[in-house]
Image 1 (cartoon, rainbow, N blue to C red):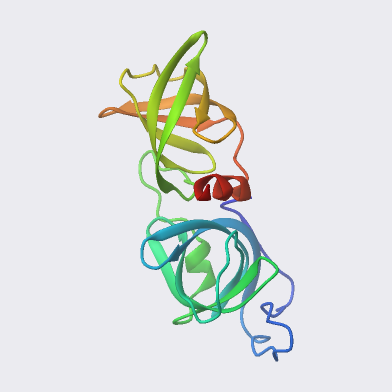
Image 2 (cartoon, rainbow, N blue to C red):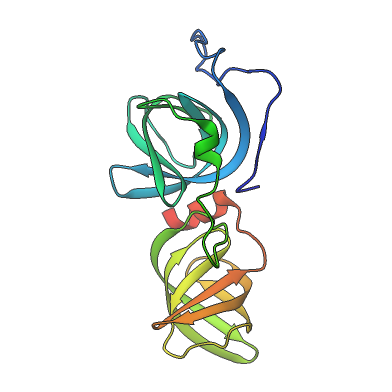
Length: 206
């Protein structure tokens, strides 16, 4: 689940491309299952699933084609990116070597808590039409950012906090959720169920 990880027993190596010698056996290593953001070309942001991480790199499940040698950055939390390069890609998985070694505990630890702080899933900017149903009433809004767990929309008429809604994004299935906040013309809606990262990526790429 996003935001959680577990340490593995022993020190298993990071997955390597077929035929390559494994030179990472002595590295600290953690197996995790965590959603991140793959930043490509400086501004292209795509969801990915981080499967394990070592001090010198990590392995991710990707939802688009990547090429060995491609410079990228991985974002596991909003306040920090890890720069690196693709070293291998196979069967929807990719190995990434960091530009410089990292401390695993520092990367996976959440930022220092602040008043009202809560763990947030990786968020991507969008510009899509959304239909919002509240009971028998229907209104339209512009979705401006989205994560697996919720969406931020521009509303002409603020929705009362705590209101159950059914939100239909252009080209995506209806999603049940609840209005969480209203501020400066924006409205935050949390989904009742987290969207699988593959489903969200395919919708963003459509």
